[in-house]
Image 1 (cartoon, helix red, strand yellow):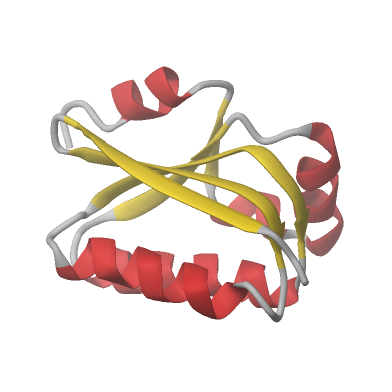
Image 2 (cartoon, helix red, strand yellow):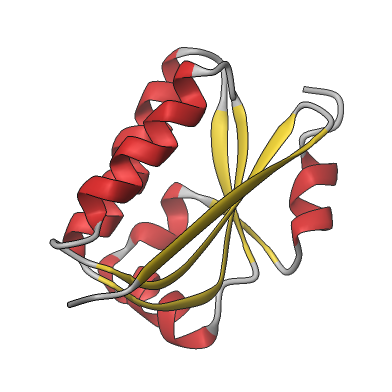
Amino acid sequence: MAVFQYSSTKHGGVTVIHIGGSLDAETSPKFDSKIKGEIDKGARKIVCNMAHLDYIASAGLGVLIAANDILSKQGGEIRLSAMNEKIKKIFKLLGFIRLFKLFESDQKAIDSFKGL
């Protein structure tokens, strides 16, 4: 059974989501429910911290892209932070690196939303 961790905090008008473990076909529905719950509660600026994400499959990537599409229609966006090299390599190989803005830290990602 795959392990998936999720937590979220608010930093001003930005929701910071920390995900960890594996984001695959088994765990992606839980992540989908959680992130859509944040959007339903009014989150428009989301930072997704991936420092503790060990694995991401196409199902997990699909959740991120779908959530970002929903947000873009509402004037929002998901930005990614603290992505480890293993996950960054997957994003690069699949060409998804150009779909999201990447930041070294949560704070840099949060700051990037200022003025929006």
